[in-house]
Length: 156
Image 1 (tube, helix red, strand yellow):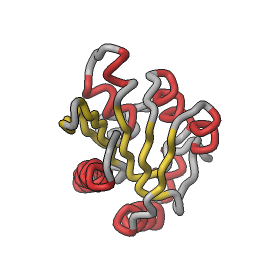
Image 2 (cartoon, helix red, strand yellow; image 1 turned 90 degrees about the vertical axis):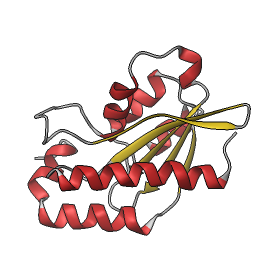
Image 3 (cartoon, one colour; image 1 turned 60 degrees about the vertical axis):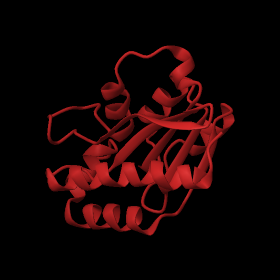
């Protein structure tokens, strides 16, 4: 369905969103949702974690991307790939499963491992790219803002 080049493009969009969040003072996690129909790749949506910026409990990178996409027909999600700079948390994992997104490409999971095994158990194809830029963005944020990071992942 997607080629490696598409994965690089999808992740690049997610990284751009993560950097945008960092510039806004937020958690540097970005996401994009892409689809391919008849060989044409289309960006459905791209966004970033906005918990701090919008004082939101639920606007993580993936959920913000779904929110920005708006209401879509079920078959759009079933033919899409979610790109995210960091392994998705349980909430975002649930949203991916709820909308039957069949494929998730993760920039990195060295700083945090979310629901990857659960996604796989539900038939979702999970690819981890171990992207160094994603690792560096998150490790810098976690080191400089441990309280905000713990809040983001629901830790005391």
